[in-house]
Length: 128
Image (cartoon, rainbow, N blue to C red; front, side, top):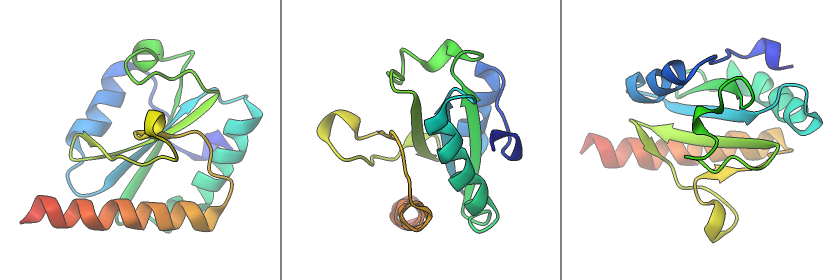
């Protein structure tokens, strides 16, 4: 399902996606397009892309094709989703060591809620 989502194919594109988006949360799925975990994640992301287009933009990055961020973001899991707002990481996660990323979201409703929660406080704190 990754073919339904925009791909960032080099480090410059990833940087530009994070740096230039001013109004929406940037969601980036780092992983391998052929990995089964990523395939499930991509399907969920593709299903919500249209619903969240007003406050989030979703991209996928193949970590084999674009290895530039593997060490910087500690991308050791097969599928990692990260969130950015106005060039800053949004801290989300289930444990202290993964506050900036989520390995896998299996439920569409949880991801939608997470995006709304990420967007609302970010918007309030940066517009005041």
